[in-house]
Image (cartoon, rainbow, N blue to C red; front, side):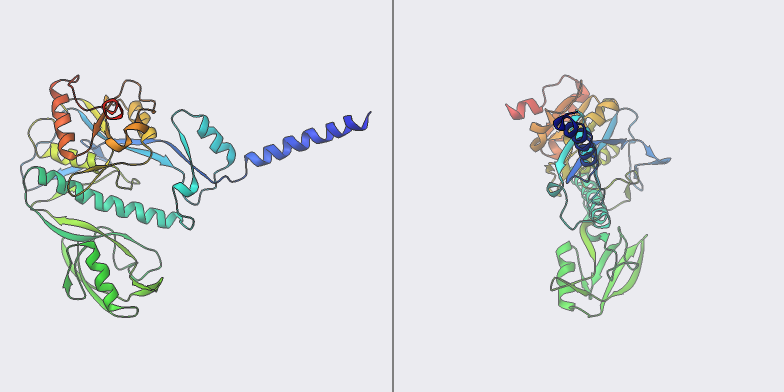
Length: 351
């Protein structure tokens, strides 16, 4: 047998082996797949997602308002190249560079804390937007959005606590908490009054140093005191702020007569600001297929996501563009009267 033939016989399995090994090595990518959806006008674990007490409410009798999610690789998950290639070939999935999604030193605990804080803030802001649209007055407060493991607040504070005062100073904006902590300094004793489950509690925290600053290890978020109880309980395991617009629409639907959707199955996404502005989100091209599979007829798309949304596999789902809460309400009102109503679509936005 010629030497060249022998070399070829030896080299082929070696190359195949190297390629096979490479396919299962960790790759610096993050995958996005369609996630679950949830009808905010329905129930989660037997409990209504939206509940209104001590005020007249009108639980919708038809239609759906679905929040949507994308399933994203977690920070500490080692994604093999073969998995990234599989997602790349899937028309409903996407692959992104790890650095465009997570910070270099971000871990699962940090990611979860950020996601929890975003959800906590988003819920209260969405309720506030719905009430403001109905001219119902309320006042601002500060809530604990997330608590960092290993910091002074761990075991003392928890997400959802309302911070009434810190260091003897009443606080109504998140930035005010940081100002008081800095004045107390590293090692200073800091008394705080919080509200949990309707009861006031006195706690004490001792700030520690991080990057030259005094910290107690919480993410304060904007919250509000409402004139009557409004509970919005998202399904367990879902975080982030991307459902804000859908949350606000669901609360608004409960507080107004009739069914806002007119019986339509509506899904959507988008952050919501205290001023009622709808903001862009990530994973729109995966959220749309998820809604499609769950029977959505209309999808509310943040205006700034319209370009990407038009590339998603939407099937027969109509992609409607929204930039403010008021437009979202006006759009659903028009579609409830006539499903073919002339409303702003993503095609209009991108022309």
